[in-house]
Length: 350
Image (cartoon, rainbow, N blue to C red):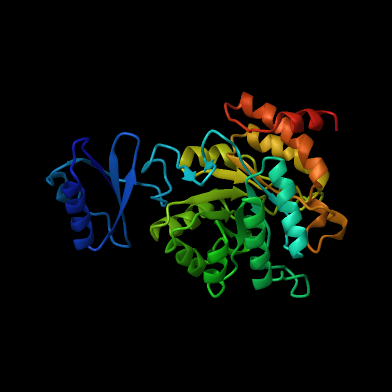
């Protein structure tokens, strides 16, 4: 249920509604809007009686929510959620671009990559410190050392850090380093981890599971919002189908569907979506054309030497012309993507 407050509702009116919700055994969630404040109600009990709230001062109406996902639904919040950083707004008019290697392989690699990406106008650096892998014999990341290298890269470049958290045990260490906590596809339904990041006040990038439906992705996000963390970015990274010519099937259908169902921003991971580097530019452009709020792209200085996912990684020299095309497409999509004029001219000659 959603309690809609009147325009002239006082802070005291809001607190009385929240106290009533808590007294009935439910959890209140303040949801600011462009014009009105709403209060969402969650809990494992039956739907509360609307009449209990309509008589309270400052209450305009009580609206039942029929969808299984409540807090992530547009029924609860019609405006798009935006997440503010020092120099960028995720979900705003400017496209969000996150780039970097699959794994942090050394201090020099990640610092040099960060500086290169900064010159291209990228504001977010991705890099795995803890790497959940299908095989226990594959490279698992440099763990705590990699977190230190990421922090050094941020100090040198000023880029925001996006890195994956794989379990609740290492969450405190990763949260201390990361500006955005990434929940990988294999952990999308790790409910203990979802609840743990829900208790933090740090943005979360939630990737769609290997074979998850759109509703399952939104329900996973609901766990995080239900914990009080409303800064969630969804990520479409492809799903497993019968097709074997690519690593996954990049489900761009999900973008307009999710935009209709949820107010949360959504970005696309074309690198995992197709798994082959030369298809990444085309799928990046298609993702933005489908309405995505941004991209997370694997970029490595020497993909052939990468310790993980080298075959789907772009070299910085291949990223530059893609950024040029994205900047032009952004205008058509009523979005922006800023690039230095000299880089734009150079990219067009590559």
